[in-house]
Image (cartoon, rainbow, N blue to C red; front, side, top):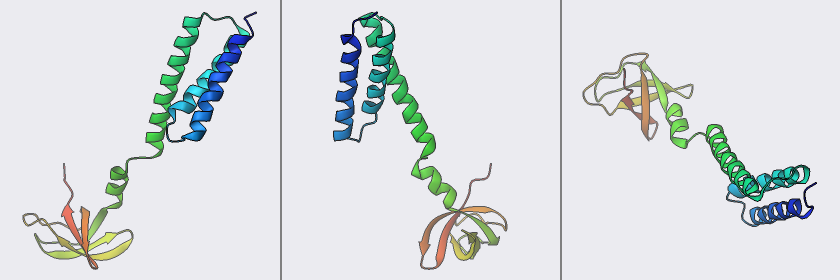
Length: 146
């Protein structure tokens, strides 16, 4: 049976980290470290582990948990640029000559649009990128075609 004070030390570390997290909730690494300390408190209460193994286990759990949390958060909340790019696509419903005007369907509505591309005509059914708005007229550029 391991000494009773080792799990208590890990429990105190977890409590201290949770207090810091409550005082400054902007860094998620403290929460992961607190959970790692709680887990180590439980492990050391059940089995005797050498001090070096406990510290290495704490570090590994904290780093792995922080990396997992950041990746999970990145998947859950995509960068604004990616989301915005999907929202700014429109479909051409009447052909637009180079530097001319036509109509596009954007967010389910028909809009007047002017092409900012002076060299390339945009055909019916093509996807364009909405880059700006001038009153009720959208400013569009042709989307790159592979």
